Amino acid sequence: MEFLQNTFDSLQQWLFESLVQPLAFALGLGNRLEDAYTGTGWLLVGLLQLGVMLVLIGPLQRWRPVEPVTDRAAVRTDVLYTLIHRLGLFRLALFFTLTPVLDDLIGMLRVAGLPTFHLDDLWPGLTDQPLVSLLMYLLVLDFFDYWLHRGQHQFEWWWRLHALHHSQRQMTMWSDNRNHLLDDLLRDVLLVTLAQLIGVAPGQYVAIVAITQLSESFQHANLRLWFGRWGERLWVSPRFHRLHHAVGLGHETPGRALGGHNFGVLLPWWDMLFGTANFEQRYDPTGIRDQVEQGRDYGRGFWAQQWLGFKRLAGRA
Ligand SMILES: [Zn+2]
Ligand SMILES: [Zn+2]
Image (cartoon, rainbow, N blue to C red):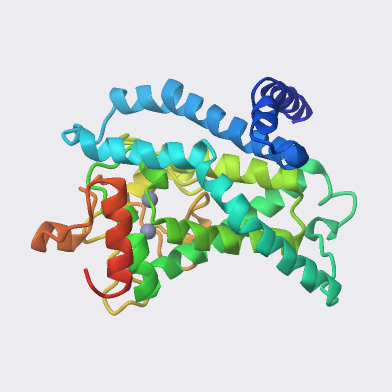
């Protein structure tokens, strides 16, 4: 744990000094070096994730694909989403627009008497151990993520945005970041706010996001893989999440309440607890029923998809 932290820190230092710092000075942002250093951490996380995807998950997809890749253009769009997110462009945009507002807001709440609460103070000596603390925050944020995802399917307006994620019929390890940007924004605000309120330290937050994103890329892989009877109940597998994407099975909501399966992000436990888990070993085609039956268009390229998302939200597509 400490070794990993130290290695990461020296890599971050090196990347900062050799690339980011000179760039910041060249752009006249020499007064924002502290923020630039934080940003370097995120960039490094993204580069490491891309490395693992190319070296590990990619070969796994070629080894045991669920289906042949027949639509390369659709996959390329997802690659673009992944690069936008993992190379920090989305985060950079948030930094200049949203972060100052959010920081002010949380600052105001603190001044107004909101106590600085740290969940890991719960049991001094145990819950403040670095690893225990990390796992505890991971558990809480994952629980919250499960309900966010339920919300994305439960509320009609939210589904109009989240549908973009489900419209991929050629699902691969690149599909995790295929989302409407407004949907991403919303999720980010909610998660960051919760993390602040329960006292997740910045370094811990980076680690939790890094683990979550990498696991999500793996779950979307075009990979015929399940973790076995017990493993399936411990951690979300490619089989588990693919079933959530299955046409007519994973995310349809007849009568809305409790429709659909496998909303969990990291842990399948919440699905087990709230009756939405499905452990059948099957690998169905992915997509949305109205694409198959009515040929509804969710867009091919990035801009078309984003634009159609706004139109759906306004009830015009
Ligand atoms: Zn979903
Ligand atoms: Zn998904």
